[in-house]
Image (cartoon, rainbow over all chains, first blue to last red; front, side, top):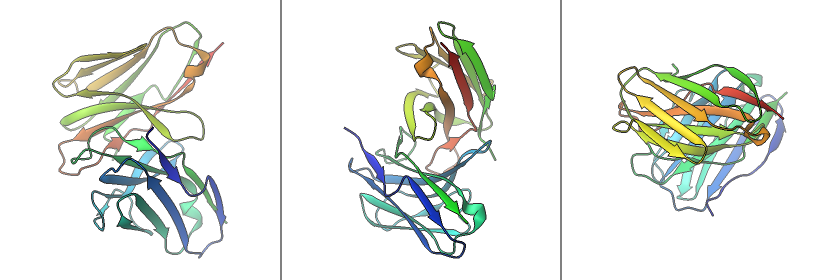
Length: 114
Length: 112
């Protein structure tokens, strides 16, 4: 069965801390994505990756970076967390080369920055 | 900017009734997808319709696509309390970027 896992369901961090959110998929998918979800704004794409060590900026990359050293793992990094990064973070993966087909989502990480 | 915009933002119906949600988008697409999200959880893919298709069915779901109007609708027939969730449309558009663009969703409440 298809599976995307995220390292934490809930996370509380202080302003200025460096935060790592991990995502692992077991489907051998080429494409992986990080979104944030805020009430009334839907899902907004932060970064995505279509291959190991490859990354592309999404709509809201400011304040974030990513790392993809292995095919199955895609990490989102908040270099210096701020209160406006309090949100639900969703990771997804897809197997098609053009990344336009069905995406499989993890359960999400609800991050609170105080 | 939002490529897909759902309408209505919220919908409340009784069990057994049909629920219709609409999605409008702005640019030409390769495909349009519908996802469901239960409260506080990740999204689950429901159905994908390609730009050369007009209608698609999956169980109690029926999706239509009108590329001339740049719109799609999701119909859930004979709704159940378990259908209570948020529903999102997502478009794979001809923008050169290899990623989906999601709308802000419709919150569906099915009263038992």
